[in-house]
Amino acid sequence: ANRMYAAANAMHARHAFAHANTAVVDGRRRRQRRGMATTTTTTTMTMRATSQEDAFAFAPRREIAQVSARKVVVEQPKAKSAVPMPVVLGAGAIAATAIALKATKKTAKKQRKIVIAGAPASGKGTQCEMIVKKFGITHISAGDLLRAAVAEGTPAGKQAKEFMDRGDLVPNEVVVTMVKDRLSQPDCAKGWLLDGYPRSEEQAQALQESGIEPDLFLLLDVPDEILIDRVVGRRLDPVDGTIYHMTFFPPPTPEIAARLTQRSDDTEEKAANRLAVHHRNVDAVVGKYSNIIKNIDGNRAKGDVFNDIERLIKAM
Image (tube, rainbow, N blue to C red; front, side, top):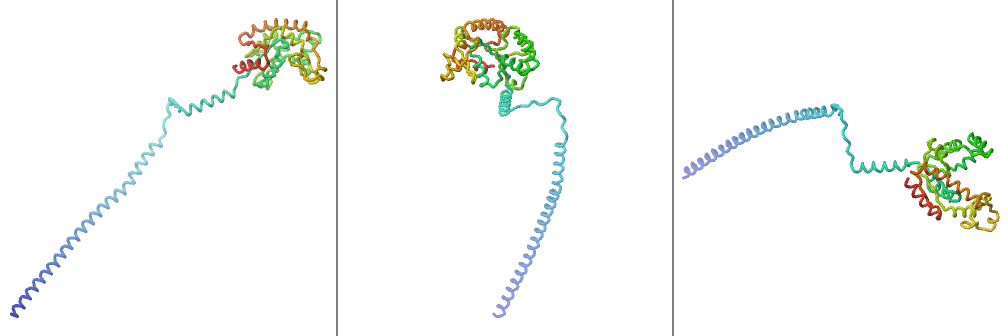
């Protein structure tokens, strides 16, 4: 029994050893197989990495080539078109251009060239003052020019003085020369208001021949009986030059009234004669300026008269 037990143990030991040896061998084989798979994978990955590295190595060169090609195309000089391309302006550009043109028009306003005429005591002097104050144009009176030229001793003034000393009328060419010289002064660049000239057809013709062409002719109309009343009641303050009227604009104090004087020709008879001469001259001048003449009702308050004049000047 003991020998049988010992033999059984020995057999069992041999089987256990064989099984263990087989397991070792199998484990070694499995490790070998895994090693081969790892090596294969490593090799494959290495090969793939090498291919990718080659691809990346060549990719920058291809990109550089492509960029270079694009640069060459961009940097090539473009031929100029023989036909200019049309410029299309947007709404904003058009609006800006319109504003600029409008500002330019405002800056370069047309020169106002005006003649005003009216009988003695028609209120012409008052309206001239209001026009100059409102529009800033230069007031030019032919009579004032003549007197100033004589006082200053200018060539035209000396020539005019010879006729005046003899009691003769100053020739039109002399007066026109003075008027033309005055209109050429810098203060007339914005515009001028020629007062009481021309007074005859010959004077109007002389102005036209000298290139002096007004754009507006204002004629103050007042009935003769009203004009005579204005002339007869007119008085002058020798101290400050203020002109009063005993009915329409009386002096403010008795002291001023006491020193007032009356012109020698401010009588009813002389006023009627001056009015007749005025009508003859105006009738002759009207024909020369029929296309620009505007009649103004002067038998109203001075403010109402000026409103009509202002409207006409602004419409120029």
